[in-house]
Length: 54
Ligand SMILES: [Zn+2]
Image: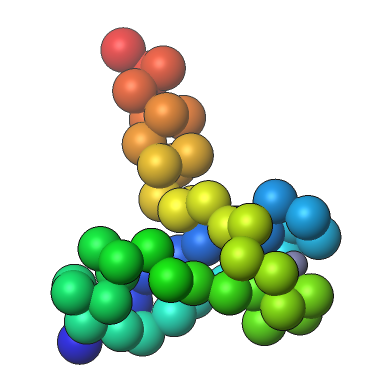
């Protein structure tokens, strides 16, 4: 099962969640610290950084 990294928009916690692709597509992810649903995928920030290099 793949592991997805997320960052919470409220408390900035970065956490990883192990879940199926189907669950990931539903986007039903909650921050484990503040229990809110405002999370963004952390890997997209990583890609934004690396694409700047060229
Ligand atoms: Zn949070």
